[in-house]
Image (cartoon, rainbow, N blue to C red; front, side, top):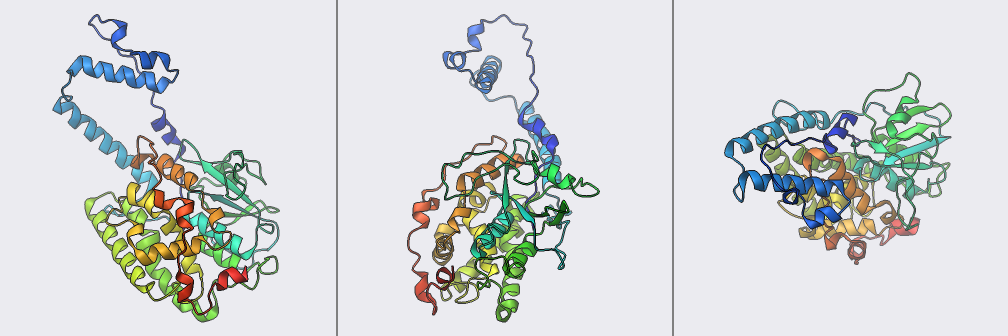
Length: 406
């Protein structure tokens, strides 16, 4: 499970070639430029004013001719289908099928000189950041944070750290590459596939260790205890293994991947199936959490981490961009309090950069948001609101066990 990026060819979709309009009628230049456009140095503003005034000249206050609307609609639909086939492969019914991770973890991997590559918008990468933080692996496994590029790729950038309490995009701190694609190509034999996050890198061998998120969080939880500051914290205890796996079998297809199946659906039928599965599962989990602090009782587990990274994005991204509109997470009393409970665990909030999350989705997923306009963040999703007491510790026989372990 990983986050993908658009092929670099889609850069052209963000920067359409300039065209020249030749009109046979004689008009005054004043028709094409109002004062705001003339005084604004933005090329995009001038371009919009030109288009607007030409439209007024041709059609006045009326809508464009029906044949033009139909033609543009057909052209856009065809272009959208081409883009979506690259961004989100689908089956014959139009249902999204997530490509499998290319690099799975080798159980004999060396535990020294590892480096983690992530992108802050990605929920799959986010789970690795949380487990890394909770286990105290920040020094043992340094991280490079890629940001979203205009062409949909993962790019490294030097962003000033205005707030030391939250993660921000960085330069590539180990290979000094410009983007994640270049890092993948450093491995022996190169690589021309999708450059996805998260990705665990062997610094000495210059090799991809793993780019499957669940493999990485299991490895961080139990495979690096000799390097962890909190080796006693076990997010996948043996006695809960079957229960964790059962929750994963429910949550991954219907919630983690379910929101993507809604957003990337390429037919009404595929969307209807996905959205039904998503909300019936959220209803079930909300009911379960009415009597259980975490999914598996009193203990925070990897299943909770995997669910959390989808929930924290739900109202700011998936409810809007992915058409998961039946309910907001805020409308689920237990789920929303559960999310806040995990958010308030020390070190978790620092992994949640909401502006990067929103920019990543609303900018990178161009086929779903051609205007690249980022909506305003719901007030209930702001840090101060997420820090409201969840009161869920009263449901646990061990109280704030996780916080005490840290």
